Length: 151
Image (cartoon, rainbow, N blue to C red; front, side, top):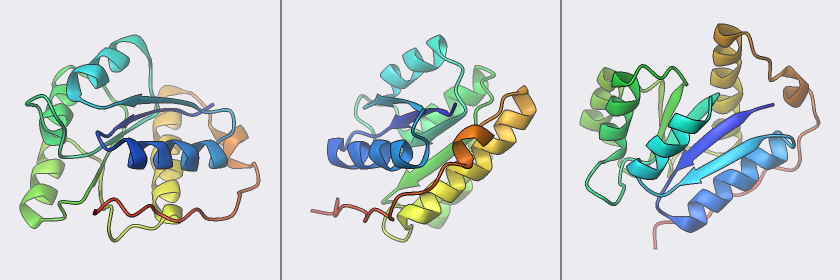
C-alpha cells in the first residue's frame, strides 16, 4: 500500500494530487499538509513511501527548507518538488538539498506525476523491503486534467 504525503498550500491543487493518487493507488494512504510544520508532524508519525512538496509554503519555511529538514532528520522517503517556480537555481537547490525529482506544475502532465510516484515509491519500497506492486498492477482510470492553479 502506497503511503504518501502531499505538502501543498493550494487546497485545489492538493485535492487534485490526492485524487490523482487515489485513482492510481486505490488502497493508498494519502496525507496532506499545508505547511512545513504540519508536514514534519506527519513525518514523525508515519513511515512514508514518498513526499510531494511545493516550494512556496506559508509559515516561513519553504519547500526547499522542508526538504533540507527532512534529510537532516535522516528521513529517507523520496521527495518530489512539484512547483510553479521552474527556475534553474531552484532545481539546483532542490538537488543539493536532497530532492529526488523536480517537476514543474505547468509543464508536467498527470501521467508524468503518477509515473514519477510509481518509479520513486518502487525504489523506496525496495530499499525498505516494502511492496507497492499490488497497487501498481491495478487498472488505471482515465487521465485527469491538471487544474488551472495559475489564477
